[in-house]
Image (cartoon, rainbow, N blue to C red):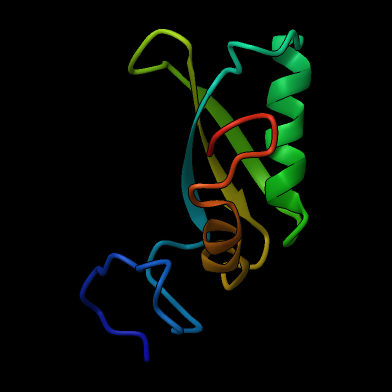
Amino acid sequence: MITDNPQVASPNSNAIYSAHEGQILLEAKYPTKVTIDKFEFEDSLRAALSAEGEIYAWQKLLASEAGSYRMVAEFVDSTVASRAVKRCNGKTAGVSF
């Protein structure tokens, strides 16, 4: 159910629709024990997100702390966003999401 009131969608919710229009905020730490190019690392994060669905747009944000990466991404299909968050949240694959 979509209402006129803005809501925050929980990744644990089974709701199909939300008011966030398919946007997510990704925060990750650059690997410290593995030598990896920063651009390659950032590309791998976008690839992990796009495994759930096509990304319409993304923007790198200023990091809140040294050694971290932040970006906001918007999916073409807004219903994909919560699945992508569920799949990536807290995961480590050479990097921590």
